[in-house]
Image 1 (cartoon, helix red, strand yellow):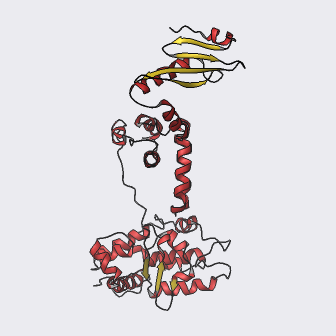
Image 2: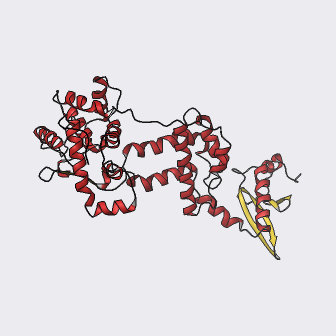
Image 3: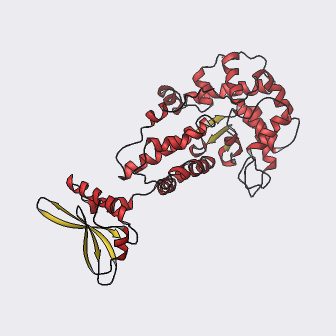
Length: 388
């Protein structure tokens, strides 16, 4: 027990130094202000280190700080320098804001940008938002993801990964030295029985009939979905297509790297049916919009739900993305085209040797033959499904 009490600290008015024991002193100035000082000695040198104002630091906390200060001095740590360092270390909430500001420009997917921040705000901030990033440990991250680990496993996985990314950033900034023990944390959580999720796809044998159905109507949405099917592209790639990407004369569609999921430019040979659809789309072209398939407002692309609704209205068990699987199954089961050619058509990453050949232009013509064959098949004009 120290010699001071909370009552005596409050009652003391006379200027001077009042010892509590173990180097802790209450200092009262002639003006009446009160503060705490810890006197330490190391290697024959004596030093007084301030611990804060009495208004902000009660006696109990002053004693804790005094103990910490003496321990730091004993092991060779400068308490004042350490305190200055701690003062600039951000909380987890502040660190998230800094990481988001640094990275948002490089995240081309607007939905990903919004979700990256919103998931941390919703699940992490209430639990660890005000915790110093230097003090964050594995059990803190576990407390965040545990409530949703089984109920929302994919969200929990993403939150866990994003917390880890913020911590890695803090290491790079010098705010901490160790990463989170995420592997150990995972082992402490219940095991998730994962089930693969596949996009519902239309069997390729039904594609010609569905494409015929689409061409029976006259709308930008149906045109966009038809082109998506014939080019085996993703919804966002079609909906975001601009006329400067389309070369009707050479029958090529060049999607720039910033619009591709893999971040690499993708060149698509256009079959005759695809070209015919694009020429039809040109009749809807608006001077105020560069988009091939403009939405109702012209300046903005079609909504993803527009294409999904067309599938629902047709009462088919498929989503737009699933037609990529329809195309891939057709290649595997009905043709002798090389699998790497099909993967390149889908803009999937493949072996370095094949990619090098593609960059020299060798695979472009092979893909043209394949896409022509797919266009003929999907349009119902192919004489047979066996192509070399």
